[in-house]
Amino acid sequence: MRAHNIRPAIRIILALALVALVGACAGTASRAPIKEQGRTGRGPEAPTREVRPGDTLYSIAWESGRDYRELAAWNRIASPYVIRPGQVLRLYPPSGSSPASRSADKSTPKSETPAARAKTAKKKPTARKPGTAPAKSIATKFGPWSWPVNGNVLERFTPNGSSKGIDIGGKKGQAIHATAPGTVVYQGSGLRGYGELIIIKHDADFLSAYAHNDKILVKEGNVIRRGQKIAEMGSSGTDRVKLHFEIRHRGTPVDPLAYLPKK
Image (cartoon, rainbow, N blue to C red; front, side, top):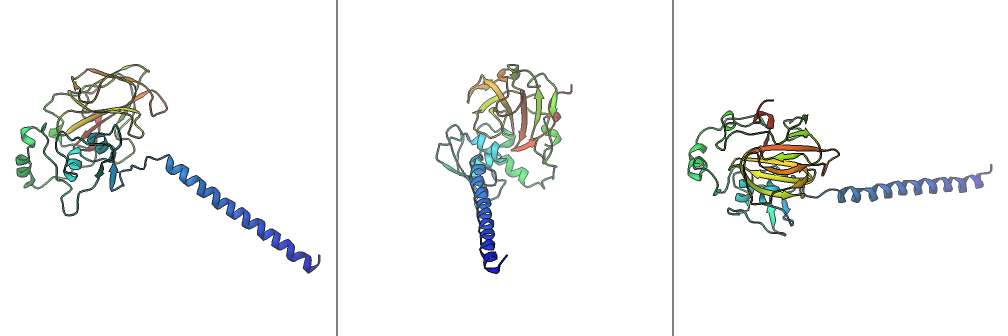
């Protein structure tokens, strides 16, 4: 083949390679926005979060892994912690403030009043492993815990892992009961990965959550008895019928099996 015929062929090959490279880059760029659209954009790493319809201070604290009292203190929100759509909440303490600072809670027991906390603050805090609560906290003032549903444990709690609670198997429509008395502080489907969710506040320190429900039978503000039917089991937000159950102590996930009666 003559030299003057080789040069055009090389140009064609280079042009085709360039087109293929540009096409690959364009394909990658088009996939990124799709991936981002699939996310809520409300991850715990964000410094702030905008309140959306249906949010409560408790649900935002739960999703971001904070204690609701910390969020209230950092954003100067007084009890009963009313927030409004469009309001922007900081998820980290203001510069110069202590991350452990908390606002007063009207439902806080005497032992947890600001004066009492000031006294205990003088004591040297004892370190504990993530996912565990102090031994004395297991004996709560609101009484013993009970199983939310009758079924086999499908997945256990993993400290610092992906499972912040336990999964319990069952049948669609099976009754789900409150594990302890308290007040419903969130009911909805606004938290990614939980489906239809209920959060119950038991006292100033303990909250529990019941996820993937098919039907919810309570509303925010309802006062709940231990053993009261609050929902029916389903598969909302997941791939099978189950109940995902969590307990949090001062914003930290703890192992529910350390609190529930032994089977």
